[in-house]
Length: 491
Image (cartoon, rainbow, N blue to C red; front, top):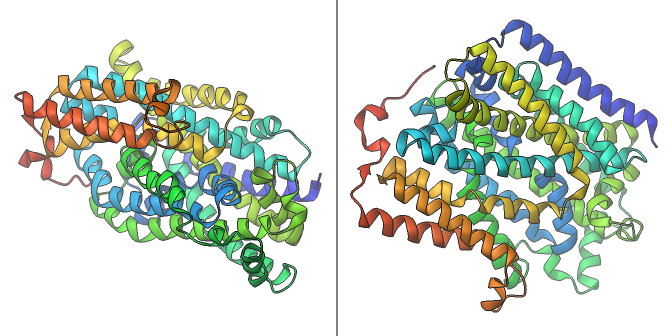
C-alpha cells in the first residue's frame, strides 16, 4: 500500500468536497427542495457546462474506456464521440426544453404531456436504470481505491461511496456544480502533464514504440478508431444510438440543465461541455494503449480493469500520480453524486409527494431527498463488486430508456396520447427483456444478445409510437402551444 499517495488523494477529496460543501451550505441555505435539487435554478454557464460534462464522465468514461481499449483497441473512443453528440443534442435540444417548461424531473414533464400513469411508469424505470448506473460508478470508485491500496474493490467502494455521499449531502446540486468546476481544472492539468510524462518515460521511443508493438504483433486494427467492420456495428454505432436515445432525456443529465439560470446558459454550456468531455476520451485511449503494450502490465491478473491505473502509479512521480488519481476519483464521485441526487429527486417529486404526502412542506421534501441519497448509495456500494464489464453494463442499462426518449420527443414536438405512450413503453421494454433473457438473438443468427439491445428498443419504440399516433386522435405536442415557447429566466 502506498500510504502517502492514499493520504494525499483522500486529503484532496475531503478538502475540496467538505470545504466547498459546508461553505455553500452556509451561504445558500438548502431549506427548500428547489434549492437543494436545482440550486435555485441560477447556476452560471461554467458550472452548468462542467457539470454536464462530468455527469457523463464517470466510471464508464475513465475505467470503462481503459477496459474497452484493452479488449478492442482505439475504437473505444467511440464511447466519447457518442457523448459529444449527446451533449450537443442536450444543449441545443432537450436541455433547453426542460428548462423552458420549468419542470423538476423528466417524469413530471411526461405527466404534463400524457398523464399521471405515464409519469409513474417512467419514474420507476428511470430510477431503476439510474440505480444500475450508480452501482457501476460504485465499482469504479472501488477499483480506484483497490489500485491505491491492497483493499478489495468492495472495501474501496465503501470508502469512496462515503465521499460520494459527502459530494452532494451538504448543498445538493449547487455543491455538485461548484466542486465539479474545481475538479475539472485539476483533472485536465494532471491529465495533460501525465500524458506528456508517460510519453517521455515509456521504453524505447515512447508512443512511437507503442504503435510499433501493435503493428509488429498483427494488431494494426487496435490503432484505428474504425476498428473492424464487426466492431464498428456492434460497438461504435450502437454506442451512438444507445447514448443519444437514452441519456438525452435521463434525469441525471437533465437536472443540471434544469438548474441553469436560463436557456442561454444551457446553449453556451455546449462550448465548454463538449470539449471537456470529448477530449478526455482521447487521453484515456492513448494511455490505455500504452499500458497494454507493456508486458509487466499486460500480464497482470484482471489487467483490463487495473492495468492502466497500475501503469500510472508505476510510471508517474508520486505527486503527479496523486493529482491524477484524485481527479479521476473526483470525476467518478461527481457522477455518483448526481445520480444519487437524481434518484432521490425522482422518488421525492414523482412518487413520495404526489402519492403519499401531497401536502408535505419543502423542508420535509428536502429531508426525504437527503435520506434517499444515503439509502440508495449504501445499497449500490454493497453490490459494487458483483458487476459485469463496465461499458457492457452501461449499454444494456441505456436500452431501457430508449422508449422514454421517443415518447418524450413525441409529447413535445408531435402528438401526445397516454395510451400510445404507455403501449410504446411496455412493448419496447418487453422486447428488451426478451432479447436479453431468451434465445431470441439465436433466432436471428446471433450467438448472444451482445450490444443489439439499443437497436431493438429503437426499432420497436419508433414503430409502435408512429403507428399508434396515426391510429388515434391525439393532442398536439406541448411545444406546439405558443405559451410554452416563452423562455423562463429563473424559477
